Length: 58
Image (cartoon, rainbow, N blue to C red; front, side, top):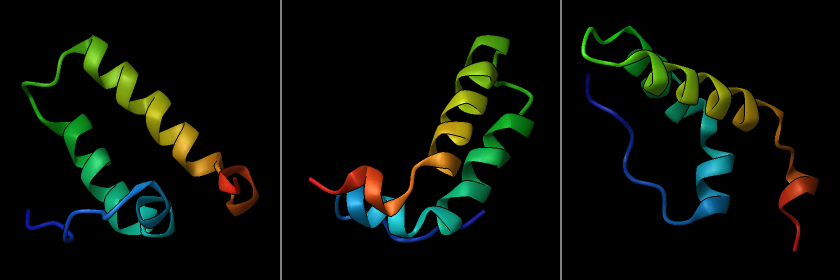
């Protein structure tokens, strides 16, 4: 699976999360992903799904 170009910074990653999300989901389907890794990925995906633009204003 060919992915998007790397994020420049956290804001770029957040704005482009729809591009990165399928990659994170694909990692969950890999046979070599451990249960601990999968649980961590699920939490990170849930977190990224819930972060809004206002959460990153600084």
